[in-house]
Amino acid sequence: MLKITLQYFPIDFDVAFLRIKQQYIRFTHYKIAFYIHVFFSIFSLLAGFTQFSTKIRVNYARLHKGIGWLYLVSIIVFAAPSGLIIGYYANGGFWSQLAFCLLALGWFWFSLQSLLALTQKKYRKHQIFAIRSFALTLSAITLRLWKYLIVLIFQPRPMDVYQIVAWLGWVLNLIIAEIIIQKYIKK
Image (cartoon, rainbow, N blue to C red; front, side, top):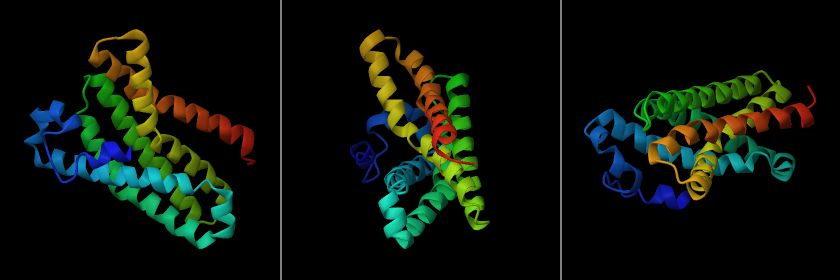
């Protein structure tokens, strides 16, 4: 993911994914949203992996808290709102656009609920919403994995793949998150 992200820096509007988004590059809000999303999403992904380490949470509580606040604020303020903007312009038509917009809204909502629970010292609720939030953060990886597998196995048309992975990339993650919550998190 870091390698994918770094190809956009220094800022270049004719590289990788942006090559197929040339009709939207003329929109300043799209360009700004895209780069905000790319930058803060990779940060969210990297920061999120540290948050589920019991060793870090117990032995380095201040580090867990600091990285966690950065994770949540980066999603709530930057990554999810910019994701909503670029989701509106998603490839694959209405169903892909709907999937990516719902992903952005869910990511924002779960992250916000995690933050609010934390400020109210409701740590179990915070943990549950953090799991949901990170499940959606992981969609950046699972979407690409599903895309690779579907193309390898079925070789469908590109837009068909995009419509499928737009949903599969996060819905299955959320289902798995709910299974983890039900099985391991005592309410």
